[in-house]
Image (cartoon, rainbow, N blue to C red):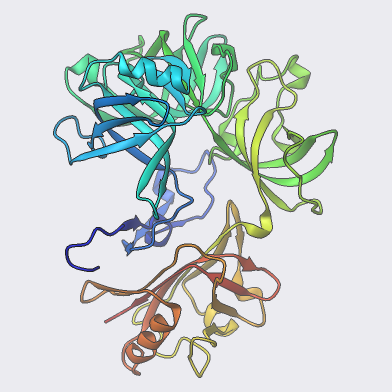
Length: 474
């Protein structure tokens, strides 16, 4: 970083590299005491931000500019969940397709900017969009303001709907904001929360236009609900959103491909919004009870604009979209986008018992020969390749595991973590990383862990890395 010059810094607290959960896939009935989490924190930094990642700009409104040549607004930056102060100002650009949700009311384009201009200065806003590194400008795809912001006036919960009975939703993994009831910002988690909605609940869908109602909320949907927190007779937390609002958010889905016909793909559901099917109660999702969603034959409506990749039965496939309105399935899910299995990044995690391995790689180690043999993989205390919810054992490949740089990567992270000295060395190129690693592995220093990410070939054992973190015992 050149002194006196502005630089982009991306920090990544890598949860996948930092945590090993055993057993890897506990069931919904697994006792908490039988699950072990081993933590070795890994924090990486890069001067090349991930341009595919959605950026958030949050803070109180300063001013709005709405002219033929400039449709933008300015905020004082207030990061994370800070409820006061600012960190300078940022201009948020908008377009004719930018979606707004202002105190529960949806707008699009200029209408949203006009509504934003009518709010008093200091109104809290949050914009989601993309940052252009070359022009140093931020453009919003979605803007929230007023009471549509968590912590800006109403109690709220963000989570996943795991069941619905009438107008009562069961929301799991809830992130709860409680500013209104306590008189100050409170942020905590709730395993399950009962939320009541009604015809008066205002509903929006991220990035979508049209009219939505509480009936659009169904099992599996990721969402944020605003209302009033309370308790039921048993002392369990509840949220009354009957006169509040709901923000339906794009939800991810993983499944194993079964068949396709007439624009509908059928999969064996693997995870929906990150939860296994056993966590869901799909009763009431279909037009009749016989049409309720079934995990083993979960159906996804795919628009003609998306080309469904050809694949053999069992091939993993990933969709993003919204769950079909409650009581309206099939199909069970409406896709906005899909991710080809061949283009999906894999994650490799490997740990070796202390004191580790002084010669972990096939000799000679070089930028063109970074290979862990099959026997070395088999000696690991833990080794796995994860592609979404799918897990592969790399030690079953006779050629072992090869690391090569991913030529298509737009962002790379290479580093060596020195666990005993609590230091971390970052490298801008793959060659620099391997050269440093060759020096560090001096016959005494040992490798204890590796975390890597990139496309993986399950047949050849080649991982094309855009991230490679090596942990040594020095």
